Image (cartoon, rainbow, N blue to C red):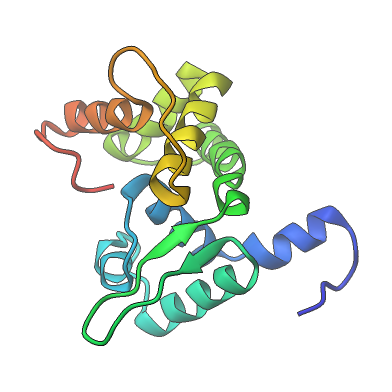
Length: 167
């Protein structure tokens, strides 16, 4: 599909500008949901299966996600491309706006607050970890727990859960 104009904002909005595409990316990035069923049942907003299928196709067609081949009886696995990984700063910026201007429960805001508090280096670390998970890049050495481990720990502490299963 050709964009309506060559304006960079327009071309980005045509791919990412609907509610569900960003939420699917959120769940792939932060929830590590990589299969259709996990994305469908793990959406706290309750995405319909036909909407999910459409958004996955759009994101694949736009080069944001790839769909692995699956043999009969196996589930296809979705992975972020580099372009998909680079949506993280956009999603982070939207989340920061939401922290400032929209109400919400503390337990669902805690990870966004941690990302804000940790700053741009933390977002880079998250993107590096996504490259390991989705692109097979070698992990970069670091001291202590990784970025996603710290996000999960913050969520677990805010909710009183041992594991951050509601991403």
